[in-house]
Image (tube, rainbow, N blue to C red; front, side):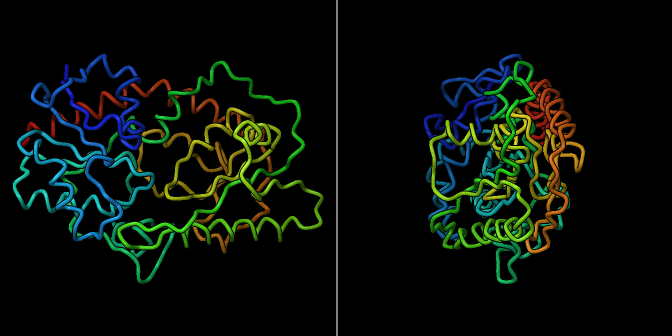
Length: 341
């Protein structure tokens, strides 16, 4: 039984990433303790130690001020941010190591499958938003990074759904394409503007949809203004195909909700990621992949496919059944890594 202390459970960003540990049957092999002195391992969610409003050369000092009490502990920086980018996290890790945090690891639910992708210049470390003047990851100690299997958006979302008890076939499908995703307001991350590539990506996809299907008679539900969640879900349920573009990260709750409603999912290609639960994203078996560069989008591939929706539903059932196994492997990996220090 591994004794784990979770920092700042009351912070929403932390609580979301901790949820599978707290409620995902991890109590079979872990015990969440009330004080760090009782713990074998301290797990600190990014809501504790990462301040995105700070420039990158200041994030380490801030993190130290928040984590100093755990300096002698076996400490895990759990980066639960939406994307595989390690922006800010690497700077925090390198700073803490330089000032004496000896037993320190990074845990991340999603990472780039090709480590060289972290050398690509892109907006905020997100390779699907290339930028020749963008951020480049540097000095990554891969021996200190553990893939946080069983955590992240996929597994937090799966705690709230039971695909075994949902009806796949929805009788009324009078909307051909559901593309009701919004735009971001002005947003900065470590002084770097991030809403511009976010909005440009979505605008390009919308332009491609409108241009390709103009005069086709297809019904496309595009975002115009925010609507109540109940109406949003009702419209998605009536849709044959749902488009879920990348935002500040790749996996999204919309992916799983659309599956439960018997919709075909289409989103930008997920093959660049290494993550537990990747079985959910098998090109042309469970979803229709789109290029990262929305300028290259070919709308002719967007055909609703009930078999694809059924395949994704089966994969969700499988991944949900594997959640405890993934969590056990993650915790066991942490113990193994710390035993090497």
